[in-house]
Length: 192
Image (tube, rainbow, N blue to C red):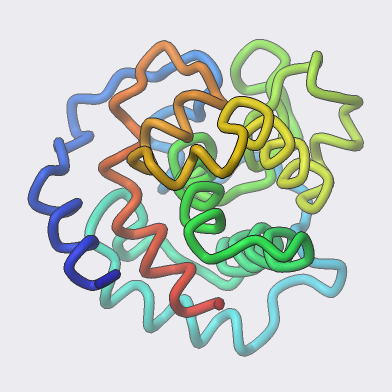
């Protein structure tokens, strides 16, 4: 079922090559640009992360195709671990990883690229302190708390991933999320 869903998403995806930098999102070139970042894992990327990055570079189809490295895998792993720690399913991880792909291309950005946004989710100052927003576990939980608030009774299950991501992030360019969901699902499948 997930494979069919990924195929349907890919068929409906709009290319992002013409995407404009959005409020609350890292610029489109963030997949190749190295921002000043904080680690996502205490001990940094592992050899396992590096090997997984190599595999993912052969399977991803959008912005991160050929751009994955151990660091980005460690960031995705931090998000997935936070979702699992809450006892939430892989669809929730798909939503969260989709969001971080669009916002930062899986980088825990520690400089204010867009207004006062920081971290994997590019959360603005009203979300929490700078150190909180740069903590992948805290940032993921803040994202999930807002998602649960906006979609009570697991209402997020009945919406497309991109719609849920946009509901939480409130981006000026809501169409950027859904096209990244197939790659997010591939990453989550590898990490789950």
